[in-house]
Image (cartoon, rainbow, N blue to C red; front, side, top):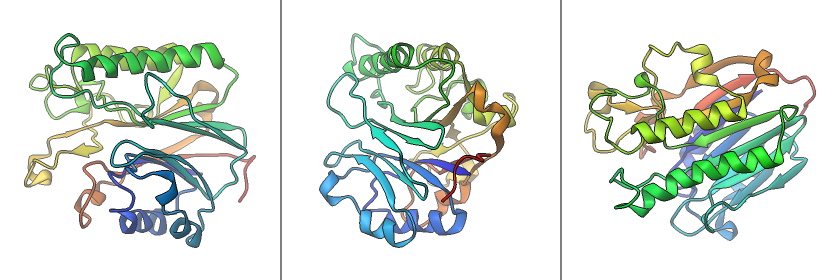
Length: 266
């Protein structure tokens, strides 16, 4: 089974790129962030036509928005509201898996909770995720938590940890918050399960970089975590780096995890 997370940065603007991803990599489940479309205008018919008939999404106009599209039947779906009414979470049950798709707030530009309400919002949102899981799930749950978590937690998740230490997405307080979330929930970081922490690995390159490949000033903002009872089912991971060169690309690239699952069939 292939599970993908991708901040698509407007599904209607980039529906052709989504179709390219689906046709080329043939994932079973795709988690999208920043769909930027109200539910009534979500392009469900286009996805149905290429075999993704099971959809769950929560959107709003021009901002945020999350979706899960699947070849596999969705047994249950729900969304939790944290902090405010922004559409930042959807979850589904597929077979024995409970899959959560999050879009954590970016946090603005100033890494100070007193000067920047967006930064406070971001940190409080991470804490609220932790509180929700602690109150509602246990170690027996087979959880996949994924999405654009908007934090690069490790030194080599960014091109220069020293230069970005005071830049939102890699500040000490954000990094500690995300690592604490992962550890407190007992989840495995799929990327670093396969790629050693001392190796660079990115999923995002800024639009501001004219030649993003040459400068390679990336960050790892997109994550897929799995509960420890799924560890033995991890097979491989991949960042679809060439997607950053697609026509009118997102600044994020799709991140794929492959797991075994004998309980699910199309």
